[in-house]
Every structure is written in structure tokens, then in C-alpha cells.
Length: 293
Image 1: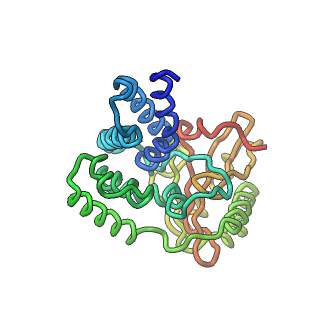
Image 2 (image 1 turned 90 degrees about the horizontal axis):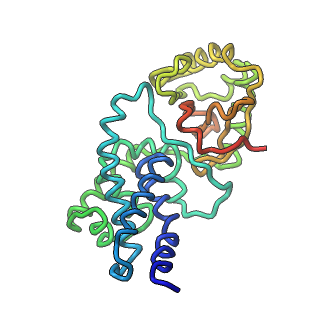
């Protein structure tokens, strides 16, 4: 086997890890793919056989590229119109993943991670999600180990304080999601009120689309009014399809033209919808593929 083949195999062996890391850091499959591609280009410029630990080299390269991306992206997101949500990521129902890793890919957690600094986010993802040691994390982010420990403690405290207090059983989430979509598309406002928590919040990411609210809506009145007005705008052929996104049950709204929106819900302890996250930006839906059969 040639040195170049081994070199390529080393990258392919760790490609999945690099994508999972960078998606959690950027909240975007497109950006994660770009970072992984740039990591490959930099890896390809290295002389085969000169890197003692390919995994460490690739993680370090991808991490630093992702940190640089986040720093640039913060400026661009200031011009984003309305709430920003991560790009939905298809996932396998019941996938056998560690709890921390599954939670870290949820919409709720990715939104929370947006409030960390790029360095804090990188340290948290590397150490608390993927269980890299502090020495490895320090090498990946280019900081001394004591500084990395401080960053990790600060990020962990921030996440602990703000993370959702309740994580519903997937079977319940599936049931409530299906019911929520059914009553919404059917225009059943009374049924919708039964599903929603009184203090429900709705995030609609459409980057300025006229039919979507440009701020987060809070409470029964605001959310019900939004759906009451939206029902009139639904295309006649729109239909709901079950999906599994970001580690849990979700829904897709689609027409003959393709996927129109992704819907992800958080539930409260009573099994009511506490948060609705509606991804309507077409650029964030292109990688979801075709509508499930």
C-alpha cells in the first residue's frame, strides 16, 4: 500500500469525527463540510509520514478553522433578519450515542452554545462532549492547559445554568410532534391550545421572509395568533411528514416543490409544547434530502 493511500485512509478514518465536531461548533452542516474540506486540503499539503498522530493533527486543524469561522460568522449574523437557528441535521432514530453527545446536537443545546465565545464553545465540545483530555484540548485550541481548564469551567457553568430542565422521552416527543402538526395544518386552534404550554415560545428562522415573525414570540396569545394567520397562507398541497432531526423526533412540512420547513419541538414536564423551532430558511433545508416516504 502506497504512502499516499495510507495518508488518504488516515483522513477518511477521522472524517466523521471532524464533521461531528465542527457541526457542533458551527451549527451548520454547510459550514462544517467547508471546514472539513479545508482540513483535507491542509492535510493534503503535509508530507506523508511526517505527522506522528494524524488524529490529533486533524482535530487541531479543524478546531482552529472552526474557531476562525465562528469569529467571522458573528459579524455576519448581526445582519441576519429575525431569529437564527442551527441548520437541521438528519439523524437516525434510536442511534446508539452517548447521552452527552446526543444532547449536544439538539436544537436547544446548539442555540445555547451560540451564547459562548468561540474558544469556550470549542473547549466545551472537545472536552465535555467528545471527552478529549485537557492536554489534547489545549493543543487543539493553542492555549495553555490551565487556561483551558478555566474556559471549560466557565462554559460548563453557563451551559448548566441555561440548559433545558426537562428532556422528554422520544416516544412522547413523536406523539406530540405528530399531533401538533396535525392540528396546525387542520386549522384546529382549540386543539392547538391543548398542545401548547401557556408560556410557549416560537422561534421562526426565515431570514426576513415576510410571512414569518422577525422576533421570538412568547405565550399562547402570540403563538396562536401567528398560526391563525399562517393557516390562510398554507399551500393547498402542504403535508406533514415525520422525521428525525438533531437527535430526536421532528417534522417536515412539504409540498410538491419540496421541503418547506422543518419543525422541532421541546416539551415541558406535562408533555406540552414549550418551544417551537421552525426552520423556514430555504438555504438551511437543502441538505435534508427528499421528503420521507
